[in-house]
Length: 115
Image (cartoon, rainbow, N blue to C red):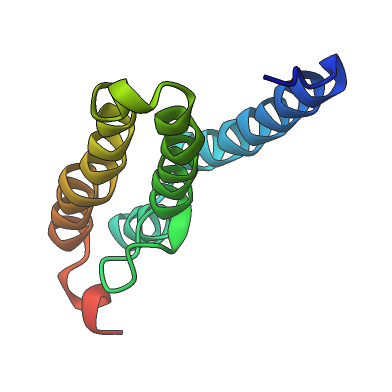
């Protein structure tokens, strides 16, 4: 098995840092004064009920799905044991977390669902 240079892990580390900064900016917006409609609109950006692959949740789920592919190939005889939890985590993000978020946004701004 070929080991990738340290720069690959550095790149991933830096990308995670950028994502964390972006999430902090969203968190700051959520923490500022908002009415129900504003809060619902911000939350809708995290998950798109009609297009689950879109939004933040969809991107995170896709990342886990992509990680499952090589993870399952590392030990082919243990593919189910290794890759299945990653696929399950992706499904939980898009389905369970997404449904809960959609429920909260509908409660905050029922008219916004149809805008």
